[in-house]
Length: 461
Image (spheres, rainbow, N blue to C red):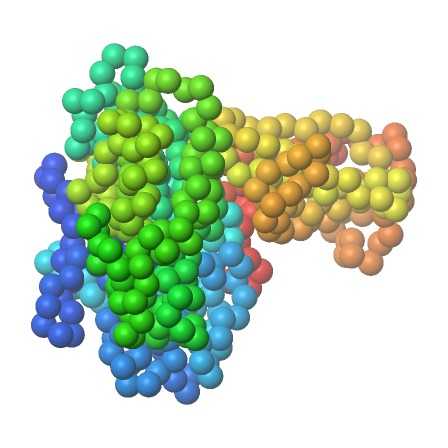
């Protein structure tokens, strides 16, 4: 059976492809209840780890909690959970193993076969790799990855096909989740969906929880959890929120939330521009349920705003549809993050940044030149954007490579050899491509010597 997994910041939702139907998987909880999600939490004590529902039980018994683990997946660094230290890879693998076990006791009733995973639209290679490899090591057969807004767009087309007529087949997906915000323009063809533009930021339900907690008392994990529960109870007629006996007027809370909401709208505007062909705005993600979000979106986009019936499940359902052979869909996602490489200049005395991808990626990029040094020292970097040739925003080193341009250096330890100017040198060709899962593949050719690597895989992972 094929399934789609939306590994979220606060909860994970799974949907199955079942003969043209795409139901959300229902889990059995330790409390004898049914749940349409699996908690994205971990707990630790004296080196022992627990995940999901078991972690929730252990936290009640005094174990140290770890919430929002998804936000820690930018690199495979050690993560402290109370008195226990674990690598990010071990964290994802342990969580995925617990999810696999929970699926056996769900209404799915079996191990997952072919699995599609969702990632934030602007996730860096490190997060994509850790998610992909962690689930694979846990026994999932991962057949692909897709950006969360792209998957939600697929679900929109499946549910609201009647709104996609004529020239107006573009959908703006507004995805405000537990820890990230993404906005994407998706072009919905009859059998081919193409993500045209995406943008995002680390804004989500966690931030709104913290704003409420700041008005209640000294912030700790337990208070944030109580604030999350009360925040999710807010509806259009709510006039006040009460946490731990402290009353917070809803207008005061909305005033605190307004800058975050306006920031998501500014990001949305940056990809919409003068695009008047948008058939609808599809609002997904658990944090989008906050009434102030819907209010501001309707003020900007009017009647075109559609809020999914399944705020937390739309992405998982869209994944199940997108990777279901019977659905016959092709999804083409243009990854929009910026990527480049630092290069040696002036005999190794200077370093310059060369932007390879500065916007939506639609094809391979090739660089050809004559080598000017005996060794090429490539330091690859992902970033939010490039301004005047300079990487800006969040910077994420994604790999490093020493390459012998001088034939006599092939096979030697290049880390011990100084970089010197040797022009005119042999011809060099660099080829960069982005695969469907969002990883950048690099191939370098020079004088019959070749190097290839897939960026994002952390050493020792």
